[in-house]
Image (tube, rainbow, N blue to C red; front, side, top):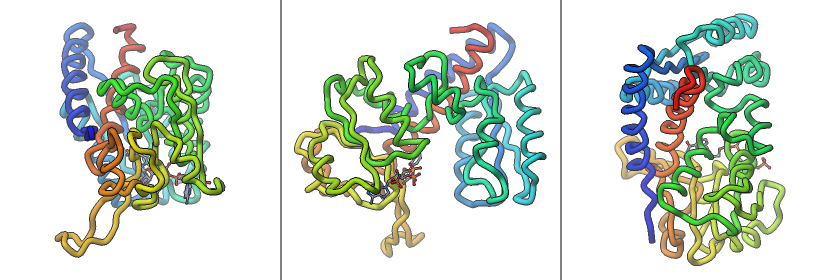
Length: 296
Ligand code: NDP
């Protein structure tokens, strides 16, 4: 069984990006910059945003965290986004979710200039992904990170049956769109399951490649997996664990102990897909910079 080490691959990607950032700095006198807006004081969001900013700095990119109060009006938030859209030193803009209830998420997504939408959530980027213009869009970081793992581990996906459990706009749907692209390292036959899928294991048991993005701890058990399948666990769930000092532990959507006994390859949680998401965010930000300055 191959343990897919997303942590190690993400470190490798970051060191490759660091070299590029420095090379471009010498050529243009500029560095790529990511601006992250956080609204309110959600502790989990604060941890994510801090990690993103820290990773930017690690590879020599400029990073800015804009902390705004939960009471900010939608109009004022849109104004801040517009300023970033017009700032030539900002190549990537990200608004951390979730947002307070009085703010319309979609209006915020639409406000970010597609050329700086390094999360890949703007409909223009989603549309380009759907029609296969991958070199002209930004791809949602988590599914993009999964594809990068397939590439770097040379996992064959072409002609395979890929079953994805979950159809969210940020993971399941873009994952399905990517896996069906007519490109090597993708080019799979794709089935998408969700909460209205009856007898879900009838589908998951057919998967050569099984991708779980559900948000339910240990949902995928060994009986649901075909022997020899490649299993990608996107889920991040906190469960109680009295043996830990914090009383909590992170687990994925896949019952790792059971499923790892029959999978040919599997991602752990933590240390699988999670670190890849940040690496691809940095990669997208550098891609935005490259497009802006016509570099490659
Ligand atoms: P969402 O809650 O937006 O989507 C969950 C999906 O799972 C939905 O499509 C839902 O179906 C489906 N689902 C829920 N329950 C069932 C069920 N019983 N049977 C079948 N399908 C079900 O979550 P996200 O896509 O945002 O995230 C999924 C998981 O991945 C979470 O644990 C999240 O924390 C993690 N995550 C990890 C990232 C990383 O970097 N590793 C990044 C982003 C997310 P329906 O559409 O019918 O409701």
